[in-house]
Length: 140
Length: 226
Image (tube, rainbow over all chains, first blue to last red):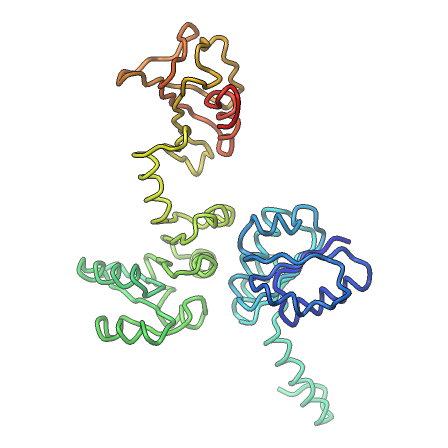
């Protein structure tokens, strides 16, 4: 499967290494050239240095025939715009985007984006851990 | 009641704009993220300046976006301006927006996502320069965003492929329409017998994105590039 990962931080590089190992064709974009350090020495995919917002960079990285686009730069708004470009302009079948701010996450999820909100997830999981500790089904 | 205008981004553009709007009796709130810039704004605009991330729903709501007559996104980051305008129009149903485009290459993304109207000082200056000092032989004169068509001007050289041909012999496909020829400060209405000459300025209406085709058929040198 062809995959494009925008943002090569902790999340992006983890996914890139993971999918590369399992035999997928991975392209990674990051505005910081040094971010390529996070890719393992045996990584066989390609790394593109550039801003994810720049459609030319996305094209160079092969967005046109990619099946999966994962967006996880450190900027919520950059992520949201890149994800919308992937969906609206290039019609990528699977676009997943990380958004920290729960409000923006909710709003763009309602507009049809597949959004992962680490803040909401962490709160949910911590809440669940407290519930487990107290031996209750649900703490309100 | 005076119309209420919410300005997001308190840099040079946002601050000068807010001052002018206030002088014209609009009600204004300006949001700025950086502490340093906010301090200066607060001194001048007092309670009309708010510090915060103008792409955060809570900040926008505190600034009163729900009752804004106009939302003007003039931050230095195009992705922020896009998201602000999407929130304004779709979440808060603000009727009027203006988005600043900082980097002209992002214009297509604003268009793609329906964020309009946009203002780009770089593009404005560039088109003025190109108009005065055409170094390219194909100039964009006018864009009809909604209709997706544009008016362009082509300047023919001695070697342009179309020079010496009559319009009857010039094969223009559908969607590329020659409407006027400017020749030595006079206008020539195109018909089949008109023969094109060097230094003719051709006014052409065409679908957007077909500049290369126009170039290839009309302006390009016989041997070489556009």
